[in-house]
Length: 423
Image 1 (spheres, one colour):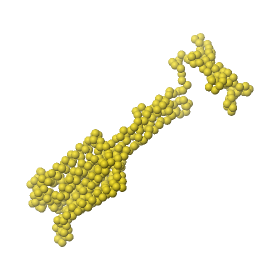
Image 2: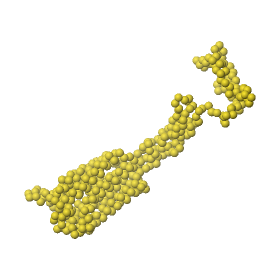
Image 3: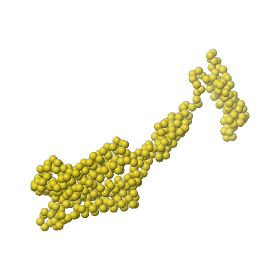
Image 4: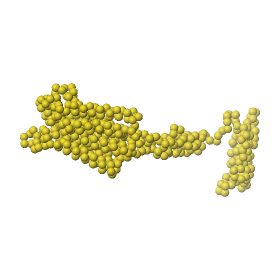
């Protein structure tokens, strides 16, 4: 190529005046026509000048510059016509990122982030998809997000549903054992009515967790909260009633005790009815004011939309009331834990309620920090774990009924045996 020294010499004598959009030399003469020449180095190292175009200042706009590319001879080092930019065009799915301290035509092609697209070449910025859409793999277009929920087809859903069914079968098995041995001393001493109520409520509670799995509907959002809250409250109130009966039975043995008038009364039935009715009223009032409903949670940083039940404030009132009863049962059972052996079923109730309260206290931070369909899994696990804690109270009785029937008699219950009972 020709040296640019000669061109610099002439450029020094040119004055560019853009005030009137005119090009002038120093003497004021307007620019005329210029030839554009191609410098070619011949084999003998001589320089040949071939005209390949021209520039006419007086020509109409858009016709001033003419170049015949076919006449241009490039250096043999070029395999093809060189580009006037230092970066290739960015394809769809990429955006241009300007390089620092380099000309504007120098840039890098950066792939669009998830949730953003670039549907044409050389886009300066990627476009965000709508909240209900997500970018495809190539980042060239937005597609609708898929709807996600805890279903019976998920591994987690299958596992939780199997555990719920197995625990419900175990509870039914314990209920059948108690009914079949209802005339034995240990079943009679443990208040058959309250035991039946607790076992039946636990069975329904285990099965109610299945309502949390599957596609949320308006009816299932209502049913799962009501069934869970009422059945759980019934079981806890029955446990509270059993614990109070233990305290009354022991206190009645003291001379002059006023607790004797409560022995043989139906106070335990009243406790269960009143506590359960309170939960039912809370559910009814909350459902009338703000019923739970299915909603789609759109997370702008996720390619899925989560379909879940909006529990509303009803959930917190239901759980709060149930937690109050559980804490009250734990306090009463804890105070009665040192009763004599014939009455120390309160020890097992204390342990069960301790696990129950611990599970629900752990549930609160886990529930608030979990997102998506895992919230439902946390709810189900809490229901199963706390229900299993209540079921534990019946395991020692089942052991005596099945493994040690020789201890299942009135003599052992009223004597100084090692097995705890309740009158």
